[in-house]
Image (cartoon, rainbow, N blue to C red; front, side, top):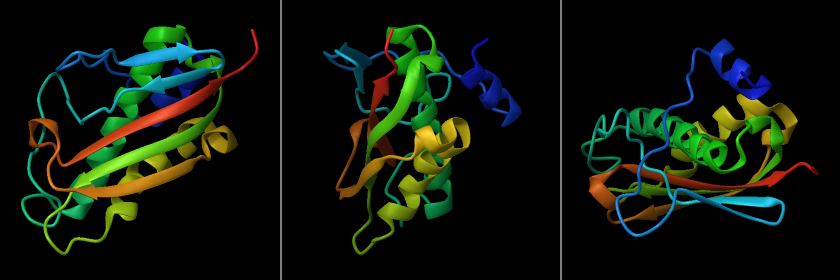
Length: 155
């Protein structure tokens, strides 16, 4: 088990299996020293724990927890193409989408779920640039979707 996966275990988390694509794309791509993940919705064992808009059917607190799930799914996608999460030199960028009810403006706090998880797992290497965007609807009626870019260490 890698040091990153040991840290996840200390946090009471397990790296899930890679979420299979729901359309014509791959979960992650390596180019040079960077890995780009596709957007990850919060599927757990192939199911959405909750669906709908944040600020309506889904509370901001639920959505923040779902953003953590998205980040775990993104880490699984990274591992699927690099083999070992200890190769991650740093998380560079996180892009979070929040399916938002009209008037909901708490997108940054929702995506903090993903950002905080990455900080807990990677420490300083997990600090990243980020965008949090409100959208009308996401695939599968997911409340949140997260993608990330990471830089790999040399070698």
